Image (tube, rainbow, N blue to C red):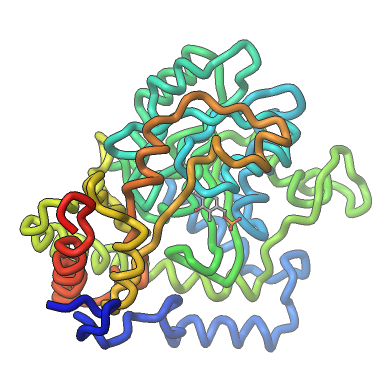
Length: 391
Ligand SMILES: *Cc1c(COP(=O)(O)O)cnc(C)c1O
């Protein structure tokens, strides 16, 4: 069969589901209500941001939450609320979105990039142990692709060294670890509502936490340094306006009612694809870390055999009508971060992932499970043509 990139017929001509999905009636109704009320900002007496915050805290199994403009600022505010600042080091995984590290820089602290487990690609407890110094103040596990990081060993390490734990849950709304929701497993957890995420309002973020004093400091950081219940122009601490709007919250609150159904849908697609890929030995699904009880399937990560020319495979897959993504470069190799003081430990796991891993995007995972056949068929077709060993 001639590859589509060489003029052959593509495996798939149909389009994939759009992201975000179409507005549902509950979203339309609540957004309209907020728009007509004129209470667009979060300080005008509207209740949707408060309801969203309470719902997320409750779903995360903790009492407190603060909604913010995006997750980068949320991670920053969480670090600040936990007292992490100038001179401190924060350990972040080497295979993640750059914001995990730039949020640490915003807090005035030093990102220390530690390697990921070479198999599941999540922050490696062994690498964290090696990266801890007398200046380490926090670790930031990332629930990558919707799979929870293996939190027990990370929390044990944190407890032993007196470190705070900030969960980057930007990709993992609704995921559970040993039957407990992510976000509530460390000292603070941060979700993103940026356009590509599993729930979105175009932009947005939300911090959840367990401790009242931490909550007050996070809230203050996001509300121009005010004290909760304090004077409007009293600013006992330094803070910023990092707030989410009521309009954004009105897109998100009704979404919570269908989040579980969407997670099931993506899991069904992933299960079907994994079955189909049993016939394509050059491609394996990146496994979930120990302790995953519910993967929210933001992405599905696939590992291509080292012999496969990945760049050609990606171009050929796009031509077959199944565009995949190359994923992250290793964080430690980003010159812009090291120029700002970030430090990187050796990261062979992340470097290998950056060469061999591809992602199936969330929108594709929203299709019916039968469509997984197209992904597997296109992969099988492309792989036979782009193995470096057998051209
Ligand atoms: C998207 C993302 C962020 C940043 O979220 P924003 O809302 O875009 O600021 C942080 N960490 C991870 C792992 C992400 O995927």
